[in-house]
Image 1 (tube, rainbow over the protein chains, first blue to last red):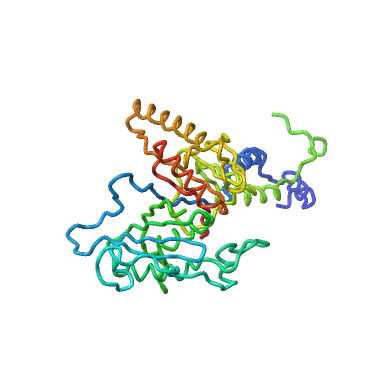
Image 2 (image 1 turned 45 degrees about the horizontal axis):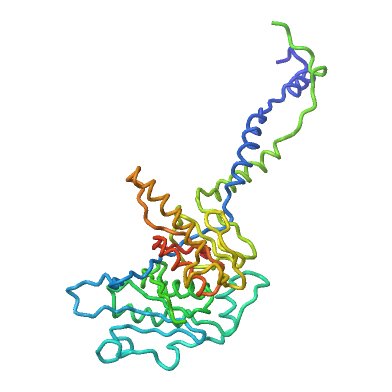
Length: 204
Length: 163
């Protein structure tokens, strides 16, 4: 203990100063980072499935034969004035039987909404400086209606969407979103509505 | 072994890279988190702004058709011009977009030839459709019709996942 003087001991310690050799690790990092940078994903994508309407005999339903209910053939027409919701079985809205007795009404089932804040949220989200149009299509009301339809037709999973020629594509996607699934209030899980979409040619 | 030379002499200038290491580690973690193995390539531009959607299904590899405000692009090759949401009449046969039909037919034939040699890889007629959010439905319908004629009947509309 007393052999070496405190001063010389301190100096020795200072000189040895253990240090990690970080350079190889740095090399690894500099290689990894460019590699990861090129494969980085800034937007997350998803897809919506849709199939062409079959040519010939329509096969739009996978309905259970033992079920007494006629197939629903839920159809959502999109026009510049709103949505026209119809079912070929004519049970929509509590109408009495007979196919095609619910024909296109004089006006849309669900009109446009003039709620500016809603339109902005639907069309732009959080995007700043985004141009939006008011009035716009009311997906929320459509979804509420479709949820009610689904309650009566638990087995049905098909929806036919028939937009007009001048309807922009994002409205079509909005309708697909509204009819695909919804989040019931107070629930975290999404509930399926009509996930199988057929896009019809629509009226000219 | 000889005693090492006095340190003073050998001492070299050393970079203090510890702080740089800190940065790197954070970047590395961030990049690893957002690492994607997706096969779909989307090149967003002013002409191609995909719509937002609540869809959750992950995209899969298929023939990729882009319908932007300026043109229709199939697998990275521009097929036909689009102006104001309309394909010029000279490219059309009724509802059919002729150049698009030709190239999709080619792709379908290719895929079928492949499927013949490799039965595990069946031709399913899947088409990834990336459409700009503002293009009118009439153009989407023409593209879908043309694809249907060239045996692509299963469409996958590519959208931005909003949640």
